[in-house]
Length: 246
Image (cartoon, rainbow, N blue to C red):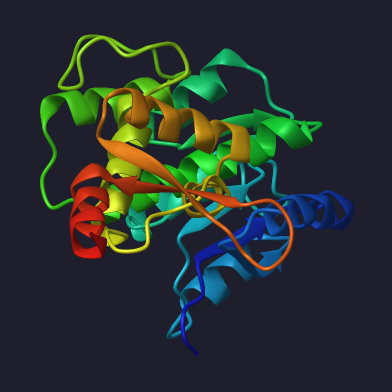
């Protein structure tokens, strides 16, 4: 079967919590929950199957057939390419420190806040997409990834200079890269929001910022009905189109 988006495995012994988590995941386009299991044994059995390609595990660390963080470390040892988000009622410092040392992507305390959960999924999706577009990373890019993971990005003077509030360099690079692949037709705020996993208003903020830098321009396309559509096009493409039409 062809792989569709980010493949998620839920490990949660409470079927009601598992169902809620699955609903949250399925609200974000580009994710697919491929399996939900209640025990470590079920998880091991599934992950050993040929063709089991999991990208992200949502893990409750209190699983009845293992002790403590045994399952977490088994996953880290034998599934090195899998990312883990812990979703747990455990708030003890030593537990949280240990999973952070183990490279957990995020730690969400039960009961789960839907907005917080979905924000995590979108940021993970965005980071994953960004890394897939790169062969090598420069220091400022690594800094942005690490700073985002430990509590949100605070813009500093990197390759883009001092960025305004609400603009982070990782997302800005992603938006800029998208324009390189959409040279002819450009892109709308709605299309951008779907591709980078943000709200339409956030997408428009990045587009207008690039307009202010004179890297892109806006053009209005008039359809048969309704309001004209505002598209954003690379300046070089805009100028080339204008020359061809003159």
